[in-house]
Length: 168
Image (cartoon, rainbow, N blue to C red; front, side, top):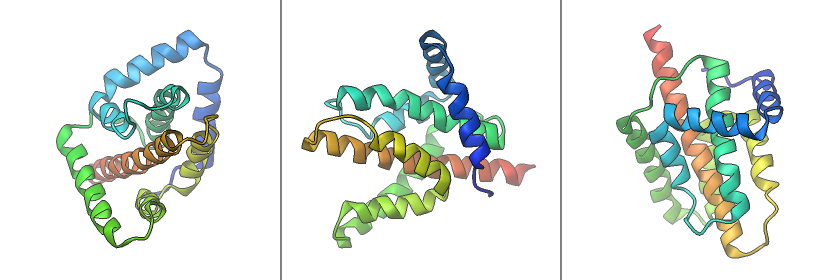
């Protein structure tokens, strides 16, 4: 599978950036309706006590994820729970290895490598790292949770795209 091009990343980001607040809200609703299971899975990586800034960024990151994948690879069908569970199994394998890893950073790096979308990951990480939040433990855990959710969501989206490519 070819990686997402920088042109696709910046085209979708530019499109989203130029939407009005109402247009953005409508698009969030449509994306959530289109991929409700995937969105819920992605949101589950953040605790309910997430910071206001982090919670506000989640729909935007999910919007960029789905729209960029569709811009690059074509329309995504509804991602079912079984497909998400397969991705969750992959996450569990990495987390199980985490027992032997000296830090969660290594878990993040391994999942980012499995996502195999370096330019897109760097772009989205810059948004996550730019969250203006205090340096509390909750804020740091929120950022880590968003990144883990981002990586595993990309692993799942990659598997869907690869499956679609095999059918063609």
